[in-house]
Image (cartoon, rainbow, N blue to C red):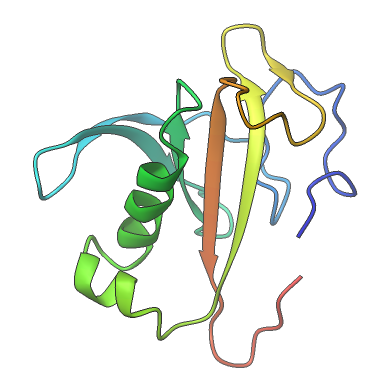
Length: 125
């Protein structure tokens, strides 16, 4: 799924790519394994997200977001039995700007990884 068709890149605040609600509730939290992460959930549609501040840990941020979507059950999350949608957004909270494009392999811009579980009867975007 591409966020380019939904979000106005001139916006100065982060939006949920699934429902376009304003996101301003990310916080530091501790995973069940004791890792410190930064993330939250959309108060409108329930999508969860993790913030990869460095752009270097997208895989870990993705795994944590998927686990958070499954109530922090990493085993269930990694079994991948429930359908979900995933969107990665390049957004710099310090400047309040979206960063266009995918970024290069060596790009270290901050990213937000959003995951939304698809409920039975609900269609993906």
